[in-house]
Length: 175
Image (cartoon, rainbow, N blue to C red; front, side, top):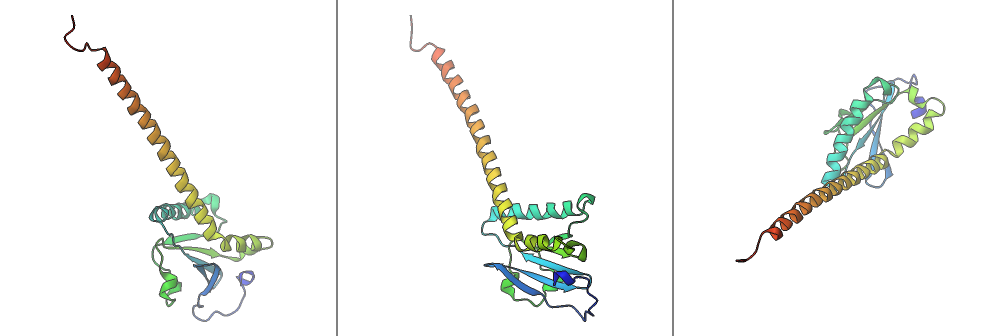
């Protein structure tokens, strides 16, 4: 399908999405359209902090993808609601807590050796995102712990100074 992105077949109406299950519980959809193929990934995460990090990641991915430096990369869109192409698909496939990420693949993205790289990237997109979300979460937690440790040290040193001041004061009714 990817090799024949720009084939001259007559497309009548909209093609039905093809559901691909490469990872258990993480299907994605491929939709053939005139001059392109769209890959749509429903994104699900088990934990709320991962949803927040992933949402920020997808919004940043869209912003970076629209820059001139990444003009040759497949356009990426993120939406909290399913794209129109998935209308009519089973509800369990469309229930997400982190929206939908779509990539438009054109003939430019599958020429020659790019086909293998494009297929590999699409098949491993879920793993790529989850890896980076977990790494980001770990980084944030490490920074928070380090910051907390430095604040505790400051408070502890303040407490020691107050104790020294109290020790220097005379105690009792001295002579």
